[in-house]
Length: 424
Image (cartoon, rainbow, N blue to C red; front, top):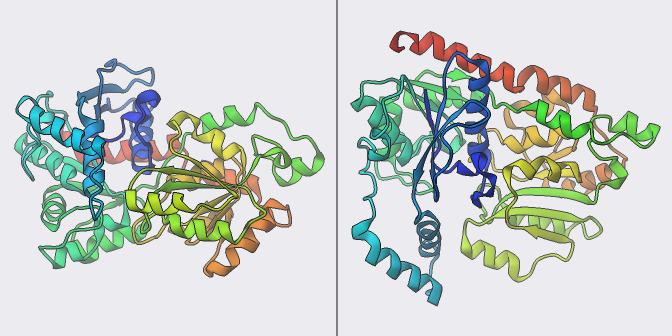
């Protein structure tokens, strides 16, 4: 079984310098969980700038497609998406370099055609692709050509925007076209959704059935981190029992994680909230995305915000362990289910969110949902000053029952057995 997650090499090789988001985390968690389950042998396919060992300690086989020009291509694509384009000497040199090396580089895959980066591998029993996009369409076209079944793991709610079905000329803010989405949805064998809303929307607007399998988290990893620290007082023990750091010693008041863009993770909204909380210390882990938004934010940042451009995947739990509160400003029109909610909850970090994704907060009690933006500063301060708390034992029990890696990956392996066992 092959899981194709082109941008997820940072989960395998944390030192690769590649941003790791929710989709990449989900892909690697499923791969390692299925390897531990033992019924299916996962092959993890991703782009890399260098060769990597084929075998991984987790039991996953790594099939890295080496693309040494990937960082330059990404930088140029990001710069050219800015309007007006800022033609710096560095950008002009990068464009020139790509132009003169084009005859010596492999051509980009043709839209909705078998992907030559995949056809070079022995056909797996099942192809799995993350999300609905042009690259997903290439995975599914490869599966169709090889007469192999395919499974789409739906990610963003935007994957299922009804305009893809209604308008053949529609292009999303991510640059995904109706042609690519409709090819993928019509030709994939099965779908797995992160929440019931996605299942309902896929059926209503695209007439495709799906299976509901929620996101998974490796709680064992978080347990190991928690054991490094013990509560320092009875108050710590009662109100923050599952935290890795005694609450009062956490150096960050509010942690925010996302990208420099203003429609999905909505960093500009988070900045607005930080300005309204001048006494709280914020840490923003913000990956590059929209150069114009990044320039605007960094031109006049609040004095109480510290920016980190990138954190390795294996260091993310430590970031949550150092924060008293986690702020989520994700827009539910674009989010699916944010993996950062699971990570924050597992580290005992209370969450303040602008939306209740899949009724996670209602069911788990991991934090507070603020329907009114004006109430966010007060709720953040209440958590930081210990006037408000969450029941971490209840939260952890919920994670263990509904999101733990063994439980979720067992469900996924069962689904693979039911749907695809005849191809093995």
